[in-house]
View (cartoon, rainbow, N blue to C red):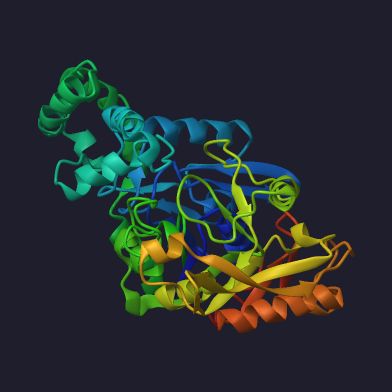
Length: 435
């Protein structure tokens, strides 16, 4: 059975958690292949809201094995805190598996994240301060600590000592902070070893063996295409590759085993943190989308910047990821708007662009060129087929599909799992039906 990848097509917060949860009853494994506890999902199940930060959304489906892949950076304190919250609400977390090769976010990574952001001042990236960037820097710089290192105290101490040799110089001499004690960090990390050990496996073997048995593996990417360190709006990006190619690297599942790549697209656009945003609305419409859509960051509590739908971004994301399907979310938020704009081009210093500009400078100076469609006032929450949608809402969806160059296979018309219009089957032929 082929694997399936879910990817955010904008700047994150598109509704990937809901899409993963929606398919949870028909898959066997749900893998988080990248990011850390900076990549949150809000999932509503039968009216009950769950905020997931480090755990895959598959944790909420009883027959699914949720997996934290090798491409994730794991804050152990946050992991066990999240597990505790779910268990207190009656969720079984014993099925969770964690890659032995996943890297660990140590306390000093969070310290460095915060002080370096303050040091940048007006040039700050707008990180969550969770230590994700510094942890990935150590990974690439070969100074990282992996989950497996917690099971060898001697190796762990050596690695912490090696990492802190440089970092303490920075903290003391550049940032005027106290040095961090090697033994203190080592002991703090070792305190999680016994609880972590039963969860840790060779996830590459686990997932590929599952595919060999014709089981369905769903990879749930954190963040989104335009936060990708290679393909996003650099430098206002994350430190991993939350695109379809990154899902292969972060899970150990080869690209020839992937059958579907599902792009999650919000019916408008949002962004958290700094960086260019051509369709951003700094007026009452921006406030309307923020309020009506409940646009507040799961991890940070920061209000999201809001703007109209950007067709150029989605079309470019489709090329990068090779979407086979799109899930359009939050269509209901646009209800009541008399005319709904769609950005179909950019004006960059008098030059019209119908595709994403090549340079950051051009993108920063891009002025959106809008096409306007008539809105609708009807409540969408009870719609379960495309035919149930008001004519104007249906026309909006059809226009977005045309501009994206990819079929829209599901439409979100409310926050709950059931508030979805299924247009095409999102899973490969042969995947089981809902039990």
